[in-house]
Length: 209
Image 1 (cartoon, rainbow, N blue to C red):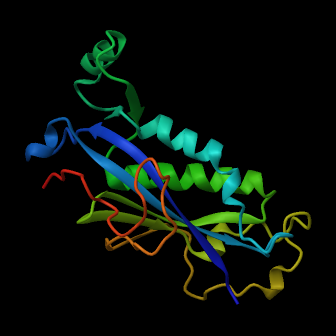
Image 2 (image 1 turned 90 degrees about the vertical axis):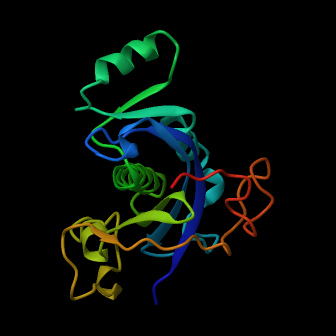
């Protein structure tokens, strides 16, 4: 039997641009980004939880600091120096990344959450998947096969019952990008100051095309 738990985190209102695009996406534009995380584990903790979400305050802070009311610019953007100047003048809160867009944002969120939860649980838990929405019509999913994300079988401190864990035969060592899907509104509610529940996850938001 395999058990997962999920957590939805609002990343914040983020501006960025795809400088290589030939469409209007080459201009600075923004979205209210949302992320849903899937977590797996070797076994439940003493409270019968996959992971204690009350301990996620630091993870939320890290993600919000990266994306909330920030301008994310690729490190190879030809206008990078101009954006740095704008940042220094107080006109934006600049974040320089190795790429921008849902796919790169999803990779950042996955790696950040995976590292965080592994350290938090001493390797008992890990991130299995993350889905990022820029709006209700567009999302990206990053996931890893179980064989790629399990702690080492050679470390008895991290894993004692490895042989009981079923590893998919088709597992590979590359991340898989799935087709976008719409958010699952049945997940736990977000912070009350953002919304009262999932009945209208994206209510009051003006979406781009």
